[in-house]
Image 1 (cartoon, rainbow, N blue to C red):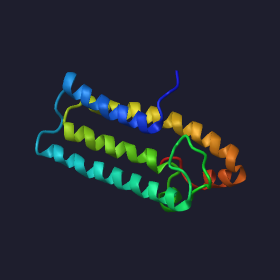
Image 2: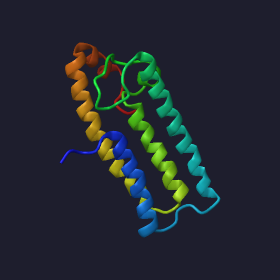
Image 3: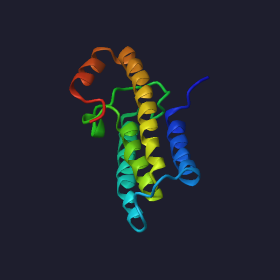
Image 4: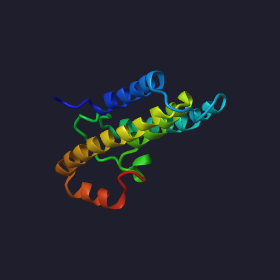
Length: 146
């Protein structure tokens, strides 16, 4: 069975958070109105994802994680992390968990991390094949995550 694409994986994680919150909420770790603090990481993650997406579009390459990269992007957030779109998913999910306020959705952050790591490994293998020494140089100077 083929694993879901990264965007589908992310959406599944959001849905799983809601399902856990409704059916197995666990203890409440944030009460209203403190749950609204979740808007801060959620907004930061969305901003990082938008910045990374715009950087890809400006460079003339695809944002589709299963597409063929036209160029190796090193500008914008890609100067600091090789995977800002995946990285952006963590604060978005943390923000969503905070908005829900119960503990069980927090477990999905670990699930997301495992899935993101799998996709990153696959993508990096493809980028190595596609860009060779240019990829090796980039990989040697920019961290995978932070």
